[in-house]
Image 1 (cartoon, one colour):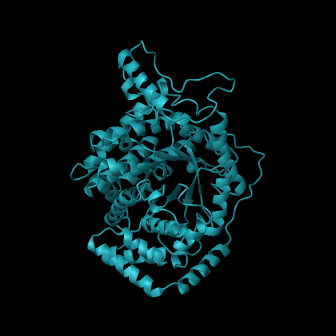
Image 2: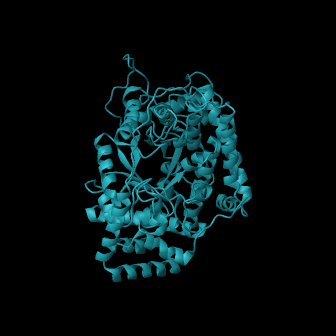
Image 3: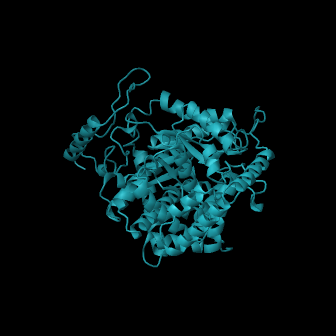
Length: 557
């Protein structure tokens, strides 16, 4: 890019910055020196390739979505939490909000993630252990008691039974008197990554995609601010992928959902802003920053050039980040505070829109109140004390960071080409489905995970407390234990709830749901009616299992 174009770009950025709202804050260094809101090359010099870097708030968005960076708005502190029953988790949510959390993120227990009720045989011993147990809309009422859903953004990390859980959330909001059209939040819903990495599916891919398409249509028409899909790379990375694989598989999943929306006749400029993303922040500081910057650039280019998006918001890749759970160690767990801080800083310097920081004890158990507070304070120290919010994309133009960004982008593009080649028609969706069927994704992730584990065992990759600096004076941690009483109480409450409801109404609602499933109509209104009648998650998913069957991953050797 020549000097004249760079000057014109800076002037464009300045006009947009001047017109944007800024926070009332002190944007100086600790020593009191004034810093500029953004930095770039000198106006009188050519900078080859600068169009790939650009200015914040401008295509290709390498440097962020907004001209102000975090001077306009800081990232949302969104701590992931859930354990035991809805009452216990509600108390944790109120603690997070009172301590400065900006939004909620719901962790569900394994039975809920698999579409099972707490009283089913498959749920024995798992109720409330890795998240909160939700059996019906009544549990949602308790989960958000005293928390106005119309005013709080809520993320829900669930994919297989995401749509019935979403309907229960809407019913809880209705019972609070909320205007549903004003709800704002995110539902994960991403079934592609379940087949690729996390393995929490219910049905074959096609019925899942049918439900997701219905959800996209419903939210676009009825709840425009709500984001019905959070395309998740986090679980792909936690399964052992490389940074480039995480980025490529995640964005490919996103392109698949764009193709789904287009196949439903939806306008990409209407539904694409409702897609958000969820990435892992691992310990390789600069590689992670480069990954986030490359993600924005790739998404904007593909949405514009391949899928015909023209509105700015349709080109924006908005993403939540969680620090890497897989990087936490059971050995010397206090070191996990440092790991989490470094990972969180990488997410911030990469321009994350919201952030969860893991607690130091999460490799051992669910976080205690104290460790959850430390995790929250980690974000607040970064936000309030480090000065990283003062300048948009402060590492932009770094030779190393820009080279890493280009390299990860190139690796991702190679993977997209391979995925398209897997399919029968050259679409990303066909390639995804074939790659899932053939085990292509899981095989490549397994190879990457094996290579890394070998490097740790040989000492080439050093992990403090594990294969380096193993001596310690630390004592064992006190950890949170979920009592078996939680499961017994949840089962008792569920039994009482089933006895008190109108069984005829429940039966009719479930029969109507199946009739709608067979008709090809949008299933969300019928599923809402079932949730209003207090049909349970297991009942809703159960009748759909009967209708659609279940998916079993083919054995591979």
